[in-house]
Structure formats: structure tokens, C-alpha cells
Amino acid sequence: ATGTYSDSTTQDLTTQVTWSSSNTAFATIDSAGLATSVAAGMTTITATLGGVSGSTTLTVTAATLSTIDVTPTDPSIANGTTQQFTATGTYSDFTTQDLTTQVTWSSSSTAVSTISNAGGSQGLATSVAAGGPITITATLGLVSGNTTLTVTAATLTSIAVTPTNPSIANGTTRQFTATGTFSDSTTQDLTTQVTWSSSATGVATISNAGGSQGLASSVAVGSTTITATLGLVSGNTTLTVTAATLSTIAVTPVNPSLPLGLTRQFTATGTFSDSTMQDLTTQVTWSSSSPGVATISNASGSKGLATSVAAGTTIITATLGSVSGNTTLTVNTVTLVSITVTPATPTLTKGTTRQFTATGTYSDSSAQNLTASVTWSSSTPSVVSISNAGGSKGLAKAKRKGTVTITATLGSISGSTSVTVP
Image (tube, rainbow, N blue to C red; front, side, top):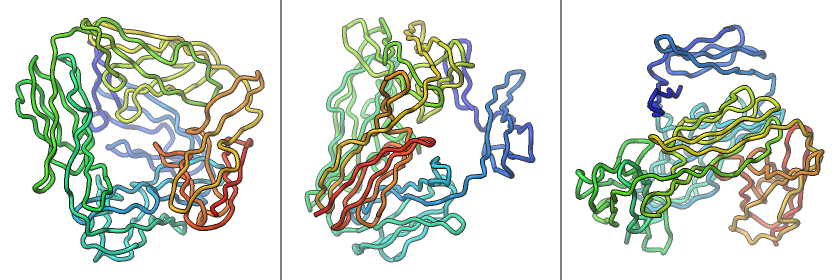
């Protein structure tokens, strides 16, 4: 539950609101906002704090779990580091769901790497010793999925902190990333594993809290050194906080149309008094003038994501302080006619990856990128796997010699292409 206040700020209220379900015969919900399905049907989920409430409709389907996709696929990590795995379930109605916190995780060799089932760290593998590949498995009921994990003896040689020497306006934030280079020339994202520090916390602080590691928050005009440290190795960059003020906010895409049933990600870009620009998507407060046409999220991890509800138009607005920008979103009732999967009939070398794209053609001849909306499948995942995980949807990995069919499905419409691994 995300609360929006009279000054346009937002706050996560998930643990503060009172949760309720209008029909507990279909789904119950606990004090932490975790809903548990009981039977197929629809119920209204409501969050209440004081005299203010918000609600959404939860539909429980009769679909059954078909497969579980574990990502990333076959990673290698250096001993002493960790790897976060994600479990994505595909159901009999071709819908997908993130099951990372619901599955039971296991490692085929805890002497090489353990994997957590503890709340808040489910799917987090911790290396113990060089070895492998070992099998990491996610299980829910009678369905399981797996991938391999290799732990190498490589040692960390350097850490690069990016972006390099950025400037931000006072009152805004900047996300930093730490990338480690190891003795075997491999690289690994260490953003959540390093310890972050700021040399001048009076200028900017930087977070080590779970879910926001590497997020710097400006405090006052000046410069500070941002450092990422893991063991004896560190890397740094300089962050400059300026006195520039926000002049305008541009919301993109501009005046898009969206078929009913789909989502669209919006981006907010701020232009400041010193002519610099900054991505403010995660810092603004998003609103829709007609939530009955489309809603838009202010929740962490999905800020700016609009979900169509009914045909019509709505104004999507992004606000930061006293400055706002907007665009118009039109939701129409066109029907999906076909899906084209590209690249067509590619050849992949064993061990490499390839991003596939799904493009839908609609009854009004318009086209829409559906890569993140479709459900992806491979006719032979042991030859070429393909991801349905958020952030990597449509990413295929070649595992061994053979030819497979890669299919993208949305509702009753699908499109496919063949992939050969020589």
C-alpha cells in the first residue's frame, strides 16, 4: 500500500494499514498484505489507514502451475560472493507469476553453495567453496525448476562504481552500481554485496539498507566521495550536489495508445535551471486523472507503470515538489490479431544469450511491443531456455546442440520462431 500525501510525497504504508478481503471464501489477506488464495473467484482487497482507504480487485483463477523458470541461467560467481535467484511460474492459462518467495529453494551441494529460504532473502545463494556446477532447485508442490551454479576460485581485483562523477540537484537521489572485476577477467554486479559509504554525509548519504543499496540522497550543495568496499577491495567516484532547481518534467512516451489489458511504463525526465537533465521516474509521484481508465503505480520497483482498466482517456501526471509534467494515455478496445517473434530463425553459439522481442499486431493495424507482456516458452529448454522473469523476459540462453521453437503467447494468440545451436 502506497500513500500519497497533500504535498505530493508518497510513502510505503504496507505494514501500517489494515488489510481486508471482501470475500474470504476466495482469498484471505494477512496484516503484512500477503494474500492467500482459497478458491477460484473475485474479491476486493482493501487497505485502510484512519479514514482513508484504497482497494483493488484480486481474481483467483483455476489455472494450475505448469513450469518453474529459475533465473539467471547457469551463472558463475566467485567464492565469497552471493547470487540472487528468481523463480517464475508459468500456469496452464499461460499467465506468469513471481514465485521467488513461495517456492522451496535447495542446493545439490551445500558444501559449494547454500541457498536461503528465510524471509527477506529467499533465493539468495551464498558461495562456500569453489566447485560445481551444482544444481539450484525451486519447488512448489509437485512442480520444480532448476539451473546450475558454478563457484570459481577467482579473486576480486577491482570495483568500478558507476555512474562516474555524476552531478545531481539538491533534493534528488542517484542510484549507484558496483561492478567487480575478478582475477579470471569475469565481472559481477556487487551492488547489493558491497558496503557503501559517503565521505561527506552532510552533502549526501548513501544507503546500505536492503532494497535500496547504493541509493544516494542529496543533503546540501557540495561534493562527496562515494565508495563501495568488499573485503580489502574498494572503488569510488565523486558525487557533486548542485544548487540547480527543477524547471520542467517531461513524461514519455508522449500521448500513447494502449490496448485494454496491457501495461505501459512511463518515464519522467527533469530539466533543471542549469540545463542538466535527470531521470526522475522513481522520485516523482505518479497520478492518473481517471483511475477507472488506467491506474499508475507509485510502488517501489514499479513506479510509473500504468495498467489499463477500461476504454477511454486519462491524463498521466508526474509531480516533484511544485513541478509537474503530464501526457495523455488512451486505452482502446482493439483486439490482438498476431504476434511476431524476432529475430527470426537465429543461430546461437552454445553458452551465449539472445534477447527476443514479441511484437503484436492489432485489429486497427497498430503494433505494440509485447515482450514484457507475453509468456515465453521453449520447445526444449535443455537446448535453449528462455526467461519469463521480470527484467529479463524473452532472454534466451543456448545450452547444447539442437533446434528448438521459441514461442510467445498472450491469451489465445501466439507467435514463434526456430533457434538453432550448431
